[in-house]
Image (tube, rainbow, N blue to C red):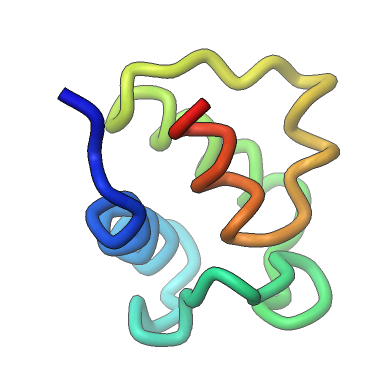
Length: 79
């Protein structure tokens, strides 16, 4: 069953909080991972691995670099 954007956002917020310590409430669709949330590339890989497990999707490395915002990840998961 497909998850709603809000469900994905809440799960991503929890994942990002667990990996980086950034409050889940700060994880909003328009936020840029690097510029606004200050997430480094190693943490992004950890987040991607956790998201793959959580949402049962495959995020290839060449696609990961294109996921700049939280909304990009939500769109990728929903595609």
